[in-house]
Image (cartoon, rainbow, N blue to C red; front, side, top):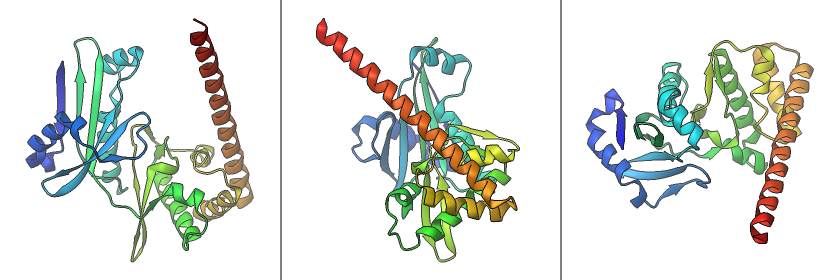
Length: 260
């Protein structure tokens, strides 16, 4: 199996220790998050913490696609992190990526970045309304999203767990993570509003974000809210329909196995 390893030019001094860390990924025990599909581990390299994200081996169709036609999730994460930083948008600093493949198939990939110690993620805003500066963070996050849009960044995974939030003396800093799905280019009004659809199920939060986004754009607040709430509900309907279908498929597969 061949490997391709790329390290950031400013971090070339870490090349050997990062390679070793990836090779010994399974020996690390400190896991970040739930690790449902991909696994993220925290490693200490030369007295500093980094994260290594191991992407699961894709299905056979995508093994061919990633081998010959598409960039891997790890490579895209690395590329997009560098592009965001060039635009002045914060994300954990990209250190390196590695991809592993056979002559015909793509296998594993890894993405390494600096660990950002955050105070919370957007997800906490959706579950804990007692946070003292809840509305201030939500409004600042909305302004941050407006800056993304103004810079032509369509973060397709703009969802609750993918923005890290740090409180500072000046206000708040926002860091994007899970970067492998992004598009860059001018965004029309409806595409911008649709970008909020995955963030929350709470109408009260949509009202705050639509109010703040209307201030940023000069658009009519009622229209911003109408579209933001509409796209949120449409996303939730699709999400729950998929979950329901998956449960049915799981039930019938289990039933079939039990009858064999």
